[in-house]
Length: 168
Image 1 (cartoon, rainbow, N blue to C red):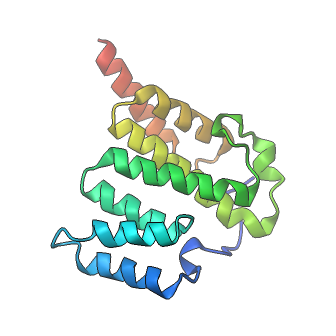
Image 2: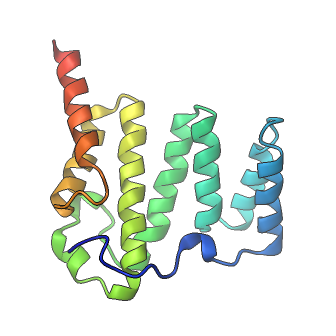
């Protein structure tokens, strides 16, 4: 399956949010420089805990604040929200090529979002020096994406190189 050979449909950021949630996300964006963005984002999360817009905003906020554990928590939650949309196994380690190939064409945008979210989890684990977890994730992505459309191959090489550096 070529992960670029599809027409984008159902993009998460096109999802209509409750007006209060949209307002809180906008307020967080306005208050980012003042350091007052977290509270509106958390309020938005409590109003819409399954909103990918909110979860992505939380991930970005925490990542740019160098709060990688919090960014990872938001990203793991996003993966848990996306997973049932594409009917993938609960444990990403059980994901096989047939899960991707059997997904209806109208859900390929969500499949890509799932895979990119899994890649983000691998990247955050790498930044947190949890290299074995990161390596496992990138190996799974390379296995599923033979054309490297998700871009995990270079990250896998980087993790292996980093592990070899620690071992010497």
